[in-house]
Length: 193
Image (cartoon, rainbow, N blue to C red; front, side, top):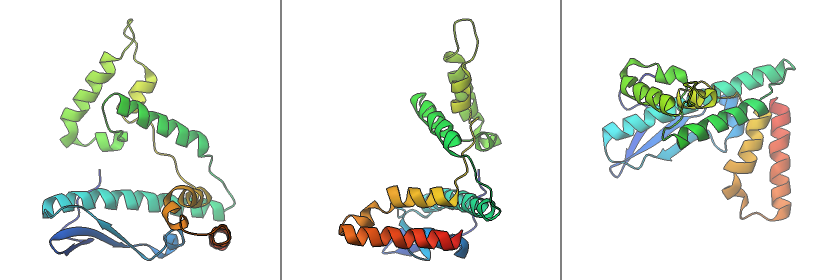
């Protein structure tokens, strides 16, 4: 779990409501429409805004680190086999959710302040053991965070962006405009990598 940030870094307040506001590193800006992230936190409480901000900072930092690693590997001519790793990760998340938990990697569960959560998760694993006492390895990995999140290549990140994130942006475009939009993104990716 990431260390909480001091003060109100990356927080802005407008009309009593808090917003997450953060500049995007130059190296990963081609994957975004602008140079900053602005996100409503949906709260007027400073403490809740800080907690949500800390989670967003951790998620952004992890995602950007993966993008940078992918860029470095692609620049070196190597590719990452992420299809199998991504499927395993998605299955682990689904199994954890089915057991009543949010999937968290083992390094986050290892936090001493999370002892009660760890104990509950261990009891859940034991309850789902086979009749002869053997533990289900897939359940252990899912509930106790044994599957690491796969790394995403820059090309895969762009595919995810085009297929899932930018859908709203493309909704009002004509087929010709969509074709031009895709061509621009593909050209940017080729220059970037």
